[in-house]
Length: 328
Image 1 (cartoon, one colour):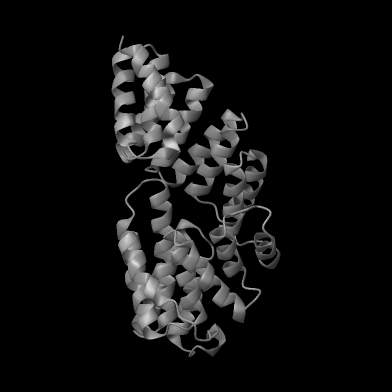
Image 2 (cartoon, one colour):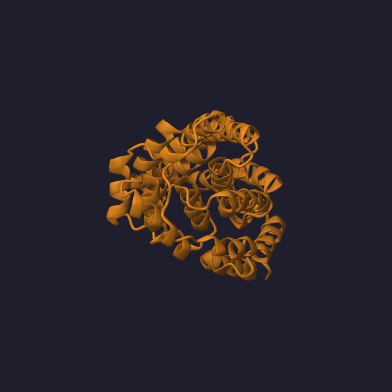
């Protein structure tokens, strides 16, 4: 990710942006517009259709910069999500980089290109460049809801920041802003408010990811049955969605359904062996089931996979404490 970021940092431009209204009309522009509309649905099917339309636009005009930017933007979203859930993400970032590089080489000053670049910086965790680029878009288009969202997210995702309020006033259906605000509340453990924004997003753009987010918010409100329902909805849309299995297993653990917890975590690990939480709750489940050997094994695997990851410090401490007890 750092390699891609280093190359993209040369792409900040200070010249005036050109609005989409000045773009040449024709088949490429028409296909791009359809692709952008599909992308903004923020559904799995929408993303699939957007890729198809953007590629049609490029076939119609190989020098149509917005279509390359659209692909760069879309792949950066997909890569970022996979990065967050510790799934394979590099190919998506590479695709994003290749398309953004092409767009910037053709016409770096178009508003769609700069907006896509701002998203890409945000997803690569280069907040300073994301802020600078989003402000460049806003200097020409002060009511660009997406740029306001990017600026808010890059500035720290404070729910009280007026930029997120303004973004949603301009576009109440801006799915990334709804999800972002939901997650900001979730991280502050204000789960009811997180639930509210996730539900608003889910009504607009149902996806496995949103059902998973909703399930987590319900789990930490103590609504375990509702949470299991959300995880099942996620899996009905994507039967290989490891995060839903993992979080379902955690919820079953809290419910005291240990056999179901173990089965769900086993499935999660088989689909994505990179999530420490799955190993930890597998260990906890075997520990509660008095299966000493398996508990020790999964605690050790958890500790191995979390080396250097400070975010798991509390779980690491508990795992070491239980290993000390179980190893006597």
